[in-house]
Amino acid sequence: MHVSIDGTLTSTVAKIVGHVNWLTGVLMLVWLLGMHTPALNWFGQIVAVLTGIVLLVVGLGGVRLSARCASARSNGWPTPPWLSALSVRLRKMPLKT
Image 1: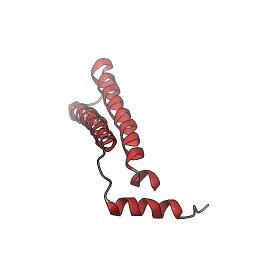
Image 2 (image 1 turned 90 degrees about the vertical axis):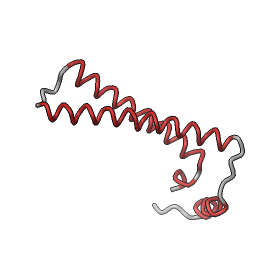
Image 3 (image 1 turned 135 degrees about the horizontal axis):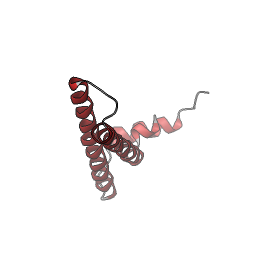
Image 4 (image 1 turned 30 degrees about the vertical axis):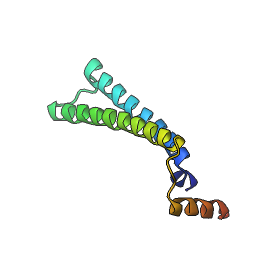
């Protein structure tokens, strides 16, 4: 829960997830277009290629957005007061095991 509130951790996680997404999209496109496997009908091929393209675009967009958020935060972008108060509350909460 703390990662979803703390902006610096959120941008790091978003960057990692973005890289995983675009690499998955590239792998999927290479696998489908370069190796022609698995053998799918025309509709399956279109859906698979579109899925690969969506993963590529969303991944690169996530990496770029996380970089912009990280640079904005390092340049003194203020944290909203309600967010910092919630972060303090979460840090004080005991962890349930």
